Length: 386
Image (cartoon, one colour):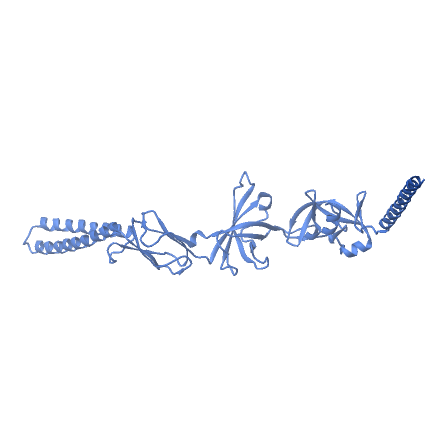
């Protein structure tokens, strides 16, 4: 009797616990669903056919603003990256000219120099031999000239024959020719007639700054070796590669604003177009455009990248224009958001033309007096076109 009662009690207790568990689970589930249905939905734009709709609160948060499309005059500005290079007329390569050994160095990279400053000295046996030959040629020419004069005086006094005077004159002419050849050889080797024998003094032909040094004291050099490069950095070139569709708007003399890469984007250098290429590269479909910069206020370094904005002198055209900030890219196509009503817009693909830095020309896709979103463009795009 006792065992049976215990089994019945256990079964009843298990049933009671199971019932309580079901009740608690149902209550919690119902409470969770109720709480979930009460959560407010996200206030974001959504697609309704071809329109993007949004609430007034969202428009306020995203600062959605519109601007009417208008026709206006537009002088195109061509933006392209380029590279700073030397002005070939303002750079000099100083070579050894002859084989020898570097004796002394006077200038290093970065040193300012004036035209004629000595950069280094090179010891050269070849130059020493040429200078010694020059000294001998001077002595021979002097003796031959003196003998020519003496024989002429003797012939006039009928002490010697005219033939002796003629031979003396011929010897003098030959000696002077040998002297000129000896002087020319010394100059060709880079030496001077009255310099230290066997010492070549490397000097710069232009003023500027030493930008490269390729020699060290005691180093042996050959005749074709370039020891130094000197450049005047007050005059530089910027080489651009401009697409053929933009070339027709660019002319010699156009003003160019240059922004060095790595700068703050505000400090600029002003130059002018000095050359527009005559040949289109068949692979890149670009032509070279050269910009000359004189005395840049912001330091430029050859090899440095710059952003160039060319203010073209092309005829100013009247066309439909919108602020650059109104244009975004959707699926790789230029797109603007055109107002449908106060709380909806239409994403519309457009074809762009030239631009002047702040505005861009719209060739197709918009009509005058359409209203486009100019503020909040990124917010609308990021919510719809993820």
